[in-house]
Length: 293
Ligand code: SF4
View: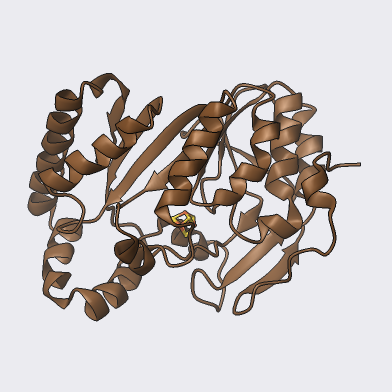
């Protein structure tokens, strides 16, 4: 039997989500060599969380879908078997879960693929580095606590009103904080990705101070900070949100993303703000600024 958690064996299974096209697919391999760890792992192509700034949209270049990002998910239905095969030869290392989707998006409640793959990885001596915006990961803390793991959540803002605009289907902010608490209580290392900070909305000195303060209160082990990045297909999505909610910011976002001089100055200034806040709070040793110009 694959599942050893009584919670995930209780019928009925969660129903398929309305408004999302779900396809079951077959994969040859699951682990990919990655600069985010030794490997990355994605049990799904596509992500129901539908964040407006999501860089994982780039995957549509290689795996085109007619549906917009956030409204399709391909489920690698043989993920566990493919991983099992791969692990017979792969050298143990750190696995980033997930780099091109959220492994704990709502569909995972039904398919349990990320859970089972994490269980397998830990059994075989791999380290799982989870990053999610889904409180569903609480279900899997029992598995993650069995080996060297890290549970990290992403926070781009502290306001639910902003979260609903930018990350409409992801778990509310307070629940993500609760994930950190539960992981720490389970003895699991924790982390927070503050990013991408949203230009002119959540990147002021005051906002950066508040974000870092909030995260420091949770005593997380590592904090990454990232700026908004211009990746393929991101701009088209940003324009929709900006036109609707912040038309006055449209040209400023364009400059920050696409004007090299503006971007360089922007990233440097953001880096300084993060550094000031981290030093003031005495957490500079835990903060990694990953701003790319
Ligand atoms: S949770 Fe991550 S992968 Fe999913 S839409 Fe948001 S940024 Fe993209």
